[in-house]
Image (cartoon, rainbow, N blue to C red; front, side, top):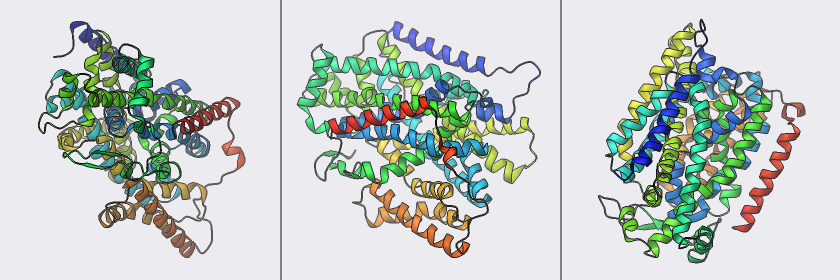
Length: 547
């Protein structure tokens, strides 16, 4: 075990704090029975700072700490485009989509589709999202989290998966979104403090005790790792099997700015249940939008916490600074350097006390995302599947009970599947690619549903049904096509089909469920406008500096 008694004390204190906080906020006033609004939308009482903190805690997980650091090790700062573009995406969602969602008073994203289209579209997308959350999101976070436990403490992968699932269930199953969101406020403090501590120590090691010198040394030693826009053949990265492949396949040049990256970002931040559910639980639209601004500023900070450490690990390995560090980077089975072992290995460098804090930060990121994903899985199943197809007259108490059972089952299934991801070199890219099978259809359905009144239900159903098949076919026919570009091509095909079907079927008339939008609907507060200008300016400056 690599944690000293003080580290264990810090970590155990964190665990007790989270569980205690979760159970405390889950309490109900005497005589009040928890209803679906309490359980799935935190009683619609979250202030802006809780919304923003919960958004980041739910988003930043093992896939960032472990997966994105691994991608930072393999291909450098370019992977930060997911974070920096997300900051701009949050502004777009806050201005153009949140007002529509909150005005309609929806619980779930499939619920919005039922309101705009029909129940067929709702059920189809609900099933897609359930499969995605359980078999891709929950599974990958459990695997990456268990990988960190294995690297840091020597805990076998299976035990790590079971332990993380149990921890997340312990405080989230009973309290629902209220427990998840309010504990996220604490989680994000640990996440940022522990993450910055790890970055500082890693840079100190590279810079022989001087963190600022270490940061400068990174740019001098591996300038290619600070290129934001990659060209074909510019960088070859490990393929997980001892060979290499072109990093362009993961981040295809200018496409990350003007192509498919927008599809994956908007699908994630604008139409993803376990993200939008926080905004739907806000006190008001203004509080939700301010929360998005807060989250946007935190996203700008994240590469310093999750990408720079990966680049530092790359310099440590390539320069042979520490042989024990290099040995720890190797997969115990294949003996190959494994990118996703970069962050857990860096935790070995931290001094006593800080190691416990950093481990707590990593665990906070993991369990907060697990709890969020499981809660959203239970929300979709209960509200869009169970209530609509199994028991339309289910009581509030029964809905809450079904939600809890669903969350437990989701954890069990994901825990069984998670070990299968062990053969991947960069799990972060696995998540992005396979989420991208659904993203083009999701983006098309919501985009046309909100902004084009003529979009018909059959057109939306076509978009939902063909997103995965088209993605699979293109992947088979054009294996060299970067998955980000593939998402863009699939979206264009779906958009063309949806337009044709809508015009032929609807004969040029507006759909009866179309959304009335006007200038007033998209108005924002002065505080939001100032924050949006600052985020946009900082993001533009970062891309100019690291182009």
